[in-house]
Length: 502
Image 1 (spheres, rainbow, N blue to C red):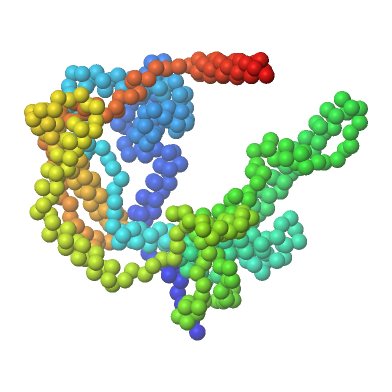
Image 2: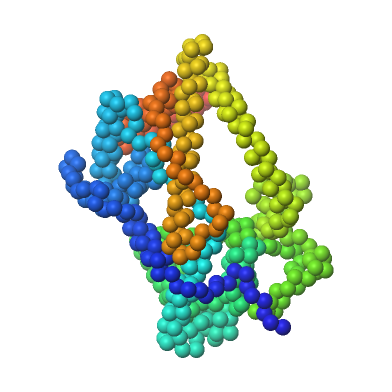
C-alpha cells in the first residue's frame, strides 16, 4: 500500500530570487533590530553634549515607536551605544519641540491616518509565501545535509537506531529522541505533529548532536568545579573555627553551586505544565498505536470506542500529587484542543451573516448617531468633566466626538488601502497573479483637517508624565527606610504597652 502524503510536508517548487532578497533584507533588519528604509533621512547631529549618528537615530526612533517614550532603559538597550540619560535628553528635546509647536499651532504635525500600521494580507498570499519559503528551506537543508554527509558519513543523521550506539556514553541519546517523538513534536495540532510533517520519526543531525554533547559536558564541568570550590570553602571555614572537617561533598554544596551559577534547581513545574504548553493529548488508557514510522489511518469504529483525553487540570493534579477533586471546576484555559471540522452549515451561516450585514448597511448612520449620543451622555453623566450641562455644550461635545469618529474611520480606510498595496507588491515579488476575489481598496484621499477633539474640553490624562515629580533613587530608598523605621517604632511601642498591661 502506498504511503499517503503528509499534509504539512514541504513541497519542492521554483526558486524565487526576489523573495530570497526580501527574506535576506528582513534577516538583516532583525539582526540590527531596526528597519533602515532610507538611511539618508536622518543626518548626524549634536544633541547637548552627545553626538548621534544616522544609524543611532534610526535605532532610537525605531525603539521609541515600538516601546514608547517612558521606556528609557529599553530604548537605551535597543540603541546599544547611548546611556539612559542620553536617551532621556533626546526624548525631552522632542517633547519640548512638540509642546512649543502645539502652543503656536494647534493642528498636529501628523494625522491619525499618517501613522503606519501593520498590514494584513489574505490567506492565499500567506500560502504563496509559504510555498516560496519552503523551496528556499529545502535548498538550504539539502546543502546542509550534503555537508553533514561529507563530514560524518553514515552517522550524519542520528536516528533511533544510530542513537542506541551512543547510549553507553554521557547520556542516552535514544531517550532524547523519544522525548521529541512523544512530547515536543507530538502536539494535538496537526501542523505541530511530526506524523503530519515528515515520513520519518524525529532525528538530530550529527553536528547538532555534537554541539549538544559539548554543551552538556561544559555545563557538567562547570557544576562540578563550582561544587568543589564550595566544598573547599566550607572545609576551610570549618577548620578555621573548629579545627577539623571531613572532606566530603554534601547536598548543600551542590545546591549552593547551582544557585551561584544561576541554574534552575527544580523543573517539576515545567514538566507538570508540559501537556498544556505543548497541546498534548494524554489518555488514562492509551489507544493502540501503529508501529513507528508507519502511516496513521483513521478507523471510524476505533474512533467511536476511544475515550476522551484527560483535561489539562486533571493531568496537572495527577503530576502534582494532588488528590483529584470531583467538584473542581476546570479553568478556562483547559480547553479541548481537537480541531473541529468546518461544516457546510457553518459556511451557510457565515454567508447568511454576510448578507445580513450588507442589508443593514443602510442603518449605519443611525447606529453612528446613537453611539455618539451614548458617548456624550457618558461624559456628562459618569465623568467628572466639569462641563456645563446645557444644549450648546452638548452639541459642541457631539461635534467633537463625530470629528474623532471620522478620523478613526478615515484611518481605517487608509490602513486597508496600505494593506491592499502591500499585498499587490508581495504578489509581484512572488511572480503570481493576485486572486480575482481580492477586494480593491482605492486611495481614500486626504481627510478633512480639524483641530477639534474631545480632549480639548475633557482631558483624557495623556500628559500624566509631565505632572510627575522626579525623585532620585537614593531619595526613594531613604524614604522607604524612614517609613520602615516608623513602622518598627510603632510595633515596639505596641509591644511595650502590651507588656505593661500584663
